[in-house]
Every structure is written in structure tokens, then in C-alpha cells.
Length: 125
Image (cartoon, rainbow, N blue to C red; front, side, top):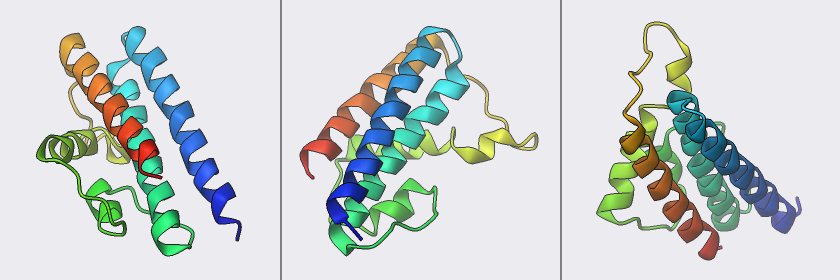
């Protein structure tokens, strides 16, 4: 396995997810935009799993579980963000668990925090 290519894949697709989140939130598609915020951080963490383990990351979506497979230590604020993003992850696709869209201001705040955390994850590679 080419470790560098794996890491590039996860970071590049995370970057794409962040761009998609920005477009969706700008167009008032808050739930879908926040789903892509989650996806961005998930893929950023998966890049670090590859870096730390030299293996393909597990097919998990839980940010806290993925984080345990890295050597990263997130701030309390970043941990709160990962908890918030979990509200908008894959389970949001099912009718029994469909979260209420937050306000535009809260969605924008989550997007800004996601950008900051993703930049931090990229810089630590």
C-alpha cells in the first residue's frame, strides 16, 4: 500500500466534502451541509489513521472511535465540535432519526469550526 497516496486520497476527498458543505450551507441546505462537515472531519481523521497505523482505516463513522485510532489530542472545543457533528452523520438519513436543522447562524458557526479543525488536521500530517 502506498501510504502517501492513501493520505492524499483521504485529505483530497475531505477537502471536496468541505467545499460541498460550504455550497450547501450557502444555499440554505443546512442538514446536508452539516452532513458534509461531518464527512470532512471523518476523512481527515482517516488520513491520520493511515499515518499512524500504515493501514486502511476502518469503515466507521464515529468520530470519537476514529480519533482513538490516532495519536491526535483535540482541544475541548474541537471535541465538542466532533460531538455536534455526530448529530448530522449517516443516521440522519433514516426517518426514525432525522435531526432538526439548526439556524443559519449556528450552521455557519459549525462550518467555520469545521474549517478550522480540518486545517489543523491537515497541518499535523
